[in-house]
Image 1 (cartoon, one colour):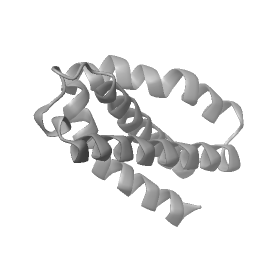
Image 2 (cartoon, one colour):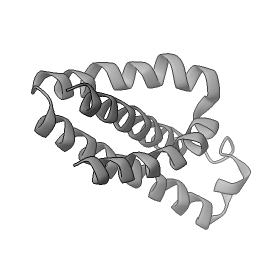
Image 3 (cartoon, rainbow, N blue to C red):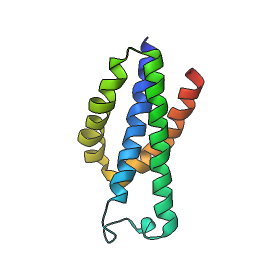
Image 4 (cartoon, rainbow, N blue to C red):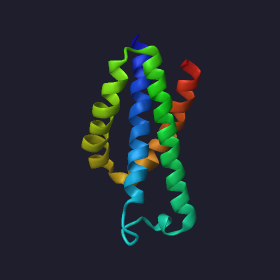
Length: 117
């Protein structure tokens, strides 16, 4: 039971963080957005990164409900993952750096979910 828990927690935290960071970057005023988001391709890249994070989060939730007790993924989805992102990751790194750091980790999480399913 321990290995699925670690995989679920890793995949859930990084995917929730990537999705929330991309959403926060999209909500910035146009003059506050980073330089690469001023171009249409940069905006599309951030949206696609958020979508990849959200899809990986759905996979992590399905993995969690399949392998763990039902209350663990449910409580992590609404309490643990957002709290870790807001209180730890967002305050330490900010939105842009956290999204850039989490995207490779989201890909690793998606591969690990597929492999250990």
